[in-house]
Length: 468
Ligand SMILES: *[C@@H]1O[C@H](CO)[C@@H](O)[C@H](O)[C@H]1NC(C)=O
Ligand SMILES: *[C@@H]1O[C@H](CO)[C@@H](O)[C@H](O)[C@H]1NC(C)=O
Ligand SMILES: *[C@@H]1O[C@H](CO)[C@@H](O)[C@H](O)[C@H]1NC(C)=O
Image (cartoon, rainbow, N blue to C red):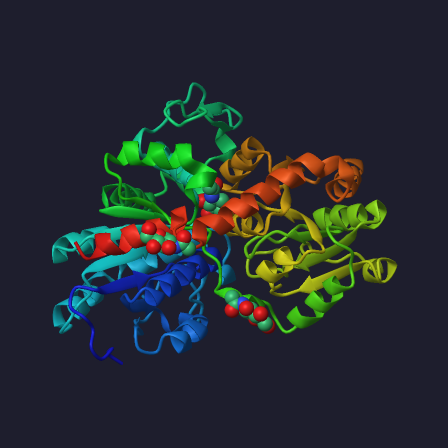
């Protein structure tokens, strides 16, 4: 359905990547753009259309959709159109599959009476830069990650590090050009990059996509200047322009936060209403990570023995998880902690939980969306990065002193005693300083997104950039 009365020159194509963290934050940004009067067409595949329903009903006259079929790919079973239903390698397959939309999309542009004047697309859709060049319009990369993580990714592909010992997975790889010279052991670097180095043939397409992001007209990141100033400035220097727009934290609009949870949402929130201020540890490892049974057991015991109040959002196993080895809640656990702890399976209303005054700490895998949500809510974090850029997320949190290191690595089983003391410490006086820092950033985040705040202005700057 076309939008009636598009003002020529103010129509933008938004193209999210179908992975939970990537899609939600770009849709939240789309909402902000629509409020400011930008006309938008959102490109999705059919099965992802329901995720847009509240956005579409909020903006019936400014947002429309372009629904294109997901091109087939040997590693994506028919009917699956979101990375959350695929094993970790799904990111690569989905990236490659969506690349086949190039010609269809080109035709759509050429036949549209008032086609978009810019493309805003996810960082895993680097090929849209080439399409934009063919069309003679600017393409903006949307990065659901922050500026430090993006700096690391760009650096990897742009200046491939030399390894002294290619057999040594623990070799430290340095990034001397990035502020504070971060370094990470090889095994913690982007799996896509490591596959490329191993000679995976699909990697050329991935590599081309990243380099296309670097060459794109602009970059929009879900972060804010007060949080990542030095890394944002670094990106501008690397890209040799100032079209890096930090517009975060991107959050669901006001009262929509509860809709992001499953049917149990209301129960969780009313349960939290019964807990004292800052006494609850919220545990959640994101939409992609499923713990092994051994890890489940230690987390459960940690919560049990520390005697803290908690909400634990448990993700259930999907395709690619060996049957019976993952995601099992220890027998009897829920009975033993009845009254002071809640286990939620499925999708928890994370933003609403984190914003609840009862929640004092967040045990997290350090996915960037989770971090932005916790920062915005001013909640201190216990960090357990498990893959990809989560390690750089965690570094940033330790640097800013809003996070306390809990564990590291997807295979790791944390030490039980450490976990017990960490949980109790996190909601006690002992964590006073970190908690105060977290609150400070919470206030800064609120200011950034309020009228005339830094992210507010960045959004205006982005929109005027669209119509140049
Ligand atoms: C959300 O709803 C509450 C009442 O339920 C209201 O007081 C508040 O202003 C609303 N917030 C936003 C951002 O709309
Ligand atoms: C944080 O981790 C997520 C994975 O959940 C990743 O996509 C993102 O790039 C990371 N961001 C930063 C700033 O490290
Ligand atoms: C924002 O800035 C504009 C222009 O300087 C000013 O008129 C307005 O009052 C400011 N709004 C707030 C809430 O400070």
